[in-house]
Length: 438
Image (cartoon, one colour):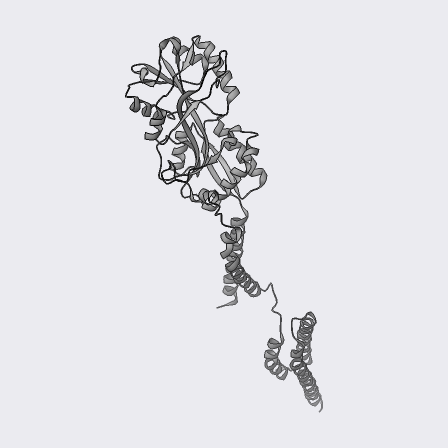
């Protein structure tokens, strides 16, 4: 192989070694960014994810969040299912996915059904043949309404209504809606009271909350829901509404992750969530309601292995997680360094230092060169090379790189080469003198 091709291959090896080193550094130094689908905008869940994302970035943690805005939990789940998001904020009553794994329970909110007092609708079953106006993100309440229809065996007409008091009031006045259903956001107490006060005034009728009296039986048959109550006075007013607790269903909302999400990253994320939730609550009050995901085998969302490791106290330590790198890393780095050094030597950027063995190995070559010399200039160049080698060798001895007992053979070799150079110099001088004489 010619020197040209040796240099080319050495340059390629050097570039590969540098590329591998840079890739390894980038892998371990860059934070892991997990995308999370959440919506709608300005909801409790969206505020929570955005506040948490800012906190993670400010802390400079190894795991970060990037919010992907959606119209609501239905679209959020779809983005997780089709791989557009690694995590999602969803309700438990959505059509589940084999990819969904629970990270944490964010909150559980009551189902609210409101009707005019004079309509005397005492329970959901009395809505037979009537029209129910539904407020919520697109498709979010479809499963809930179907569950209630099936349990009470009633056919209820449904229309979607925006969360706007004027349009809700118009639906009641025009006879387009006989009752109203929505899932009350748990932590927006003051906002809920204010909005509901405006809505009650716009409707201009005495309203009552319709209980879901058989909530225990429904929750037993449909584990996506929980039995609960609407607290007295939740919607404020004079007199307060409701005047006393009302039986209802509650809908849990979870942070879920793709089952393929890295367990180590999910573990770190879960730990940060529970350690930081009170700080997040300063910007998003819903963070204070976060609870551990169910680890039971019959849970709606099976728990993610990374989250379960945190809940079980079985987090892998730094050494356990990267122990193999501590063992193989030095070997790999050593190999890369050796390759880089060899490449640099091939390219002429580094000089090979001569130790005692290499100096002795070159003695026969130097002897042959001295014998072949025909001018004193050649002998001077040989002498200069020997002086340089001895200078480097002496520096290594002083630095402790070569044991002192190994200097004796070198000293004998240098002394012998000195005598040879002197003898060869006399031979060249005698030959020149004989050639000059007549």
